[in-house]
Length: 457
Image (cartoon, rainbow, N blue to C red; front, side, top):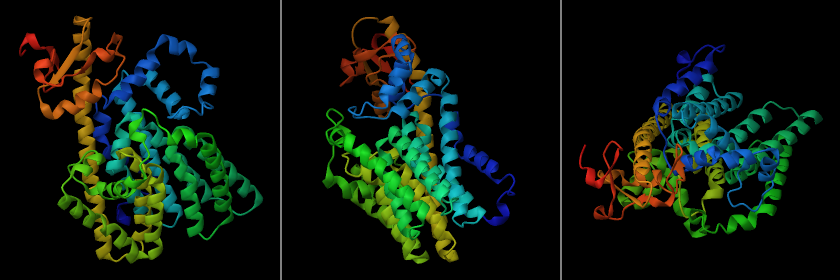
């Protein structure tokens, strides 16, 4: 963590924290394009004149009670639509909004740790370690992860408020109201917010049942119970959303993947770990084991908090058939926070171990940022070029082939079920070719699209 003599003065320390957070995410701020099809699908919806005409207060209000939708995220989707309408044509600004929101989450974590007794330098370092982690790099760099930014932010804000409350009646009412509102907003953002009451309950137990925390846990839990009463059947039957299929037997594998991913250098997406050689998985497991060992050396209570808290932060997604980076965002905040609490109790040797783990995690986070920057750079060329090709060929299928085979997965995402781009219809007639001789258009290494019969420019 940061030595105390390097921590800025109290008056400016948190502004400088935000500046450092922005520097750490410079690659994300510089990204000129987007990552996947979600951004383009929502941009098309946001630009649809009929949808704009229908978006009045009644439509928005209905979205917040339409419990039958599988992806019931009305706060996320309405905010996303507004952001897409305002910022889609300026990707740098879109990314800047997400980087700033993510930096504020890191600041909330640092403030929580400072109030929990960590020195400024420790809280400062833990907040930045969280922001620099591969989980956070993914969430802050892909604008499809707004729901994760929101629910984790609501959870951290709840803790920050509870830390400042006493045990008088007014404080208890405040605790109940804050927990109720934050949990409801979190669940309106993403299903993963079911972790909020569970984590509040764990904190209440570890803090020996302070009254504000107990009241907040009960209030948050009641919101979660009401949510599940309305939505459990829908959540257990995802229909066509195959990546959300519940597979309880997958839990050990999913759990292991999230624990080792922070140190899996060279792997940008967590689901790739399922394809890794067993020797690499074992090596990563040995590295990952250093964290709970260090926590145990500090105090078994923190090791338990990490194990139980990490499980609860990930519980809503551990039974899914597919791991995704964004699902580990809340876990990353919790792990960095607990490591910071352990720092104060450890010897120099074990502090060095935690610092080394943080450095490796930061290096991995930079790799993820670089990957997102590279994909965004290709997209900024590919999508306009594809739109021009579609205009030149208004009828018939457009079957794409990436000349750089390692880039094929990028263009598969960037061309999947996109209604249109900047007013040019695309839709299902655009897809990747199964073989090169089936292709009508080739994608050059820089993302430029050209007809097969045009030859090399």
